[in-house]
Image (cartoon, rainbow, N blue to C red; front, side, top):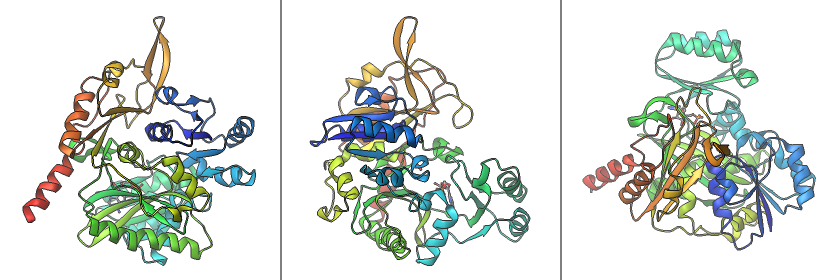
Length: 436
Ligand code: AMP
Ligand code: GLY
């Protein structure tokens, strides 16, 4: 089978790495990919949201199956276009992708179908939103309705700042039409967890739980990022809680969509806050998480390509559950100087070959590219998040230690990373033991 993966981040490298192990695979392509992906797949110079050229490519290369990584092409309707042209593709349609591309759509659907989430109001008028802020207690959460490259959400502790945020979203349009409407919602408190499931709207097959680390600095300080590291499984989600999340969140939203005539096929990601009143949805994503995927897939024993085909063919019913190994996995993201603000590029990365020899370690590349430096081919930084150093261990402690041993061997000018990825798992496990 000839397969194309679309995207260029750490998530796509993890997908490529896992699909490469499939017994069904003959040839693997990635568009556009990165320097690490280039070792596992043939990279094609077509951007992830350039649907006409991607379609041309799958026709020419007789691609049997396409896997979409990021949300932008899904929101642009890549699945609808490919399906119309008779090409098999993994991911939800444009309409189903509204679960991520419109926060208003997602919140209203949750309200209609009794999915627990923060109380909220929707505004399409900036002055009314500003008046509403005066009536609320802080902190408040303000969300642009549309896609804003992960930057459309602010948790705010100051009313003037809240009003400024409304102004920049709705009047200055810093995220364009994504800010035509906003959601203002209550701030939830608790531990966050990511629950991903495969679904074809008839069957739901969960992936292992994981926890992301969104803030840029240790101890959850500093601004939000795309994610600075993840680990799987997370003790935050006990088996009882997992079942509750499936019942009250995942099944209700998928069945709700079906009632509206929308068949969701693909991977569905629920960002959950475990509050004292139980699990509540922060957001839905219509794709794999990044960096959660890097921490989840090394634990998966089932053939990923086979499962994704079953989803696309609406045959997921053949799977009751996926097979996982018993290890824990940690992914530490190494970012460029300046990230999540303006960041530097083109820094030579050292230590990759040494880490490649380490057992139970894999490096998933994100913003990297190959470049000729002083006559030699080198790998240089080329994005905000550059590498996801990923390690397996018999338990989370071992995985953390192994991963940081590998991180210590990597160097490029200005790089930074969190030193506490996975530590929450240790703390939570100790607390759970203390209560027993
Ligand atoms: P979202 O894109 O909606 O997931 O928001 C990104 C991040 O903002 C989440 O992962 C949370 O860390 C935070 N966040 C979003 N909504 C809330 C909320 N209602 N209460 C507290 N934090 C939130
Ligand atoms: N790790 C957060 C996301 O993928 O949206």
